[in-house]
Image (cartoon, rainbow, N blue to C red; front, side, top):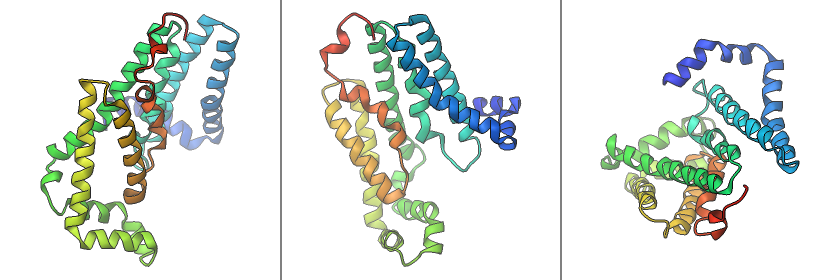
Length: 235
C-alpha cells in the first residue's frame, strides 16, 4: 500500500467500479477510445487537441491501472507500461519525443535493475532454499489441483532439487543486475533487449508470470542508435 493507493481509495472510485457494471464498461471504452481519438487528431494535425488528449490518456491509464490492481488479485508491476508509456503522447516536437523515449528507457532499466537489487536487499540471493520456497508459494494452487500435470511435475522437480532452483534464481538476479550497465552506456542496448525477451519467456515458463504489457517499454532499446530520433521536427 502506498500514498497513491490510499488517495484513490479515499475518493471511493474503486467502490464505483465494483458496484456498477456501467462504470466498468465506460472505463473500458475510454481505454480503447482515447487512443483512437488521439490517432485521429494526430492525422488531422490538431496539435493542441492531440496534446490534451495525450495528457488525458496519461492520467486515465494511471488511474485505470491503479484501480485494476487495487486489490491483491493482481500486481501493478505488470501494468506500468500502459501507466507510463503515454508520456510520449504529450510530445509534439521530435526532440521532446526523443527525450520522452529516453525517460522511458531509464524507467525500463530501473524496472529490471531494482528487482535484482531487491533480491540482494531482502537476502534471497543468499538463501539456497529461496527458489524452492518461491515455487511452492507461487504455484500452490496448481500443485494441489493438478499435481500430475506436466508443469506441476516440473515445479516439483525444481522444488526437490533446490540447488538447480537456486542456480535459476541466481541467474535471474545476475540478469536483472546486468541492466545497470544501461545507465552508463547505450552500446549494450541490443544485448539488453535480447536478455529481456529471454527473461520474459523464462518468467512465463518457470513462474507463470506474463509481462507482455511491459514490452513497449523496451522500444527505446530497439530504437537505440537510430539517427531518426535526433532530427528536429514533429513527432
